[in-house]
Length: 389
Ligand SMILES: Cc1ncc(COP(=O)(O)O)c(C=O)c1O
Image 1 (cartoon, rainbow, N blue to C red):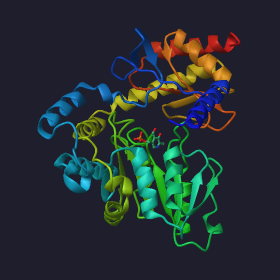
Image 2 (cartoon, helix red, strand yellow):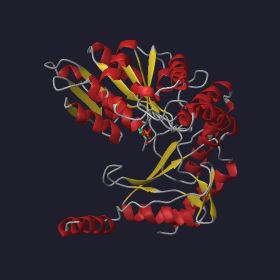
Image 3 (spheres, rainbow, N blue to C red):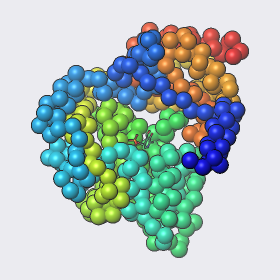
């Protein structure tokens, strides 16, 4: 290998290390959940997006093992070849019914859905407005589309009428922001989109199965608006459904076009049947068993009340995502390490995942936690803040 290349690799690693930005990997030795085993210790886990504990649910595991016997583990091919099974078709049908959309199309991951669907629907003659705090997959999808684009300040409603000379205008946003936990003002964004004959593309990765009042909570779609022809929604299965994969929800024609044009759909091995089976069973549980969501939200309220009483500065989030922002990387790492020593699994989140100067610990509350877990976490954070790390 070229010596120049290797020198550059080591320089980049050293530079990231010096700036406290080097990412490192852990490997737990247990199921995902409220408690995990790492390096021979049991830790209370506040770092999981498995908000409802579906990834380890016994009914989900049983369904996976039943369906795997029938369909095998892997899909073995792209969806347009022999990779799509009747299980995939069943999940698409169920998702569309549950969310009230005409149609749904499964992608192997949310990253692939965003980077495939946006460029399939938008091009050089179009314009995209996107929120400054959008997930990397949305940014990459927008860039891959080659449409003209503008990032608007987080949480604001951009002026779509300011752009006149483009074929199609699209507004791209997350529903619940993945690093901040705040929820968009859907009615304001949708009003703007409809008034300006534009399209709204919502990444509902952290909303689906969690947000909304309806039975089972169909995410952002249960927040006052039906899926209209102006709205496209991307949902993922790796969070509330405890599996992996994603889907775009939209009209029959939009979904037909994605099958023709979305490169990350066409040229990708179809989602493994075992993940499809898990998502299907989780969806059934979501509808049948509102208790999980009830205990999740009870835990969130409990966490926020205790944190406020302890003087811990929280963000404006009623979702499972509860960041504590420290700003500097060094401080964030020190607090994360301290909490790990005290028996909590938390990780520092630093740029470029979040904007410079906003390094944080992104806590996630789940239905698998109990009040004692939360009480002891708050005490440990309080101690960390008082011992000047
Ligand atoms: C907001 C958001 N969109 C998309 C993704 C990507 O989804 P996946 O993990 O299924 O690729 C994530 C995942 O972390 C996310 O948080």
